[in-house]
Length: 479
Image 1 (tube, rainbow, N blue to C red):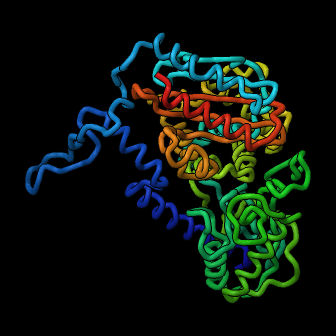
Image 2 (image 1 turned 90 degrees about the vertical axis):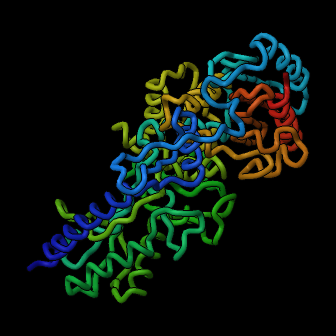
Image 3 (image 1 turned 60 degrees about the vertical axis):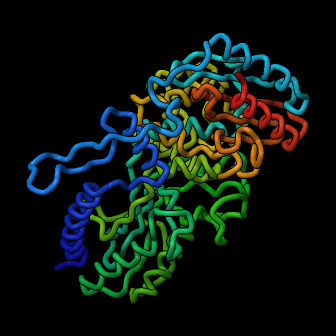
């Protein structure tokens, strides 16, 4: 039997087994990160019967029922929460607190603001809220919402190994997984594993009586320039459909570092080494190739679910994940997987969510491009939609935001004795002369408020960040 056909039989059995195992695990569920499980449990506790299942005891014959839940510690945040003060009074107190803080020269020559009640959609304060501004990394809120709307929170991105078009060839096919790693243990949580993929591939090859192959790689899923318009920059690798460890040459998982000039080739080389470690000889250098037509993969590895990718992107302000999610949004929308296609797809998804995108532009997914244009009102509108009980698929937009004084890019901001520490969740944004902050906070009356502050022509990041932190803390404490 020809080698390709033998591999097809093996792969078919493997895929069938994979489908059964996936179904079993899905039934046991969930795949979510701890943040999302907690969010889901909390939402369940708002129901009349709570969220935990308990059967009726041996021999009862009764179906499991949800056990009553104890009152929430922050019960005022739940549905139907009482309002401790009238909206006009709250809005008046907020305006009095924010106006003098917005006048701080550290915020540059242009500053816009929006604060809304997520439960009612009521605007509590605004100043230039409809003005299009360069958002920097706060545009990742947009990228997150569009990706979740297009793909769903449970979607996983495939990386496969498939028989090649020539005898004795296998092809590593990239699907655009930004969590793909060549390390034995993923340094950033669950995700696609080249190590596991190499192990499964080696097993399939040996079962077919093959221990020597040539290796090709296919990164053709994405189109257009791979290099971000910002050029060579330590904050982002070339955007390809096949990248391991974000093209990082060290053990870092976030932050700036010089990246690979050709992440696809380097991922294939890493995979060749992993195959060799498992007894498969790879002759020659990996080269670009296409898989054979109509054949099943020999092996598959799956990414972190989109919900987890969104949370990691927002918490660490990960530009590589952001650009990957923008392209996945384009693919799910039938658009080319390029910067231009992603821009069109993200615009379409926001429009479908009922967001007014007039004057906006989403030139990239990360916010590194100064051509991005977003208003403060658009950001608070999206955050309010993410808080909507009718849109649970958008919830990771909120759960992924850094927590003031504790996580991600807010770990050292509004920390310690700040009244916003632990209550404020927000996405930061920083470019030269541009500083922004957008997120959510629980106010003294128990309301979940969404806010956005965007600035331009700031004299320096340190003073601007301190001024933005004061504004966010004021939203948390104004009454």
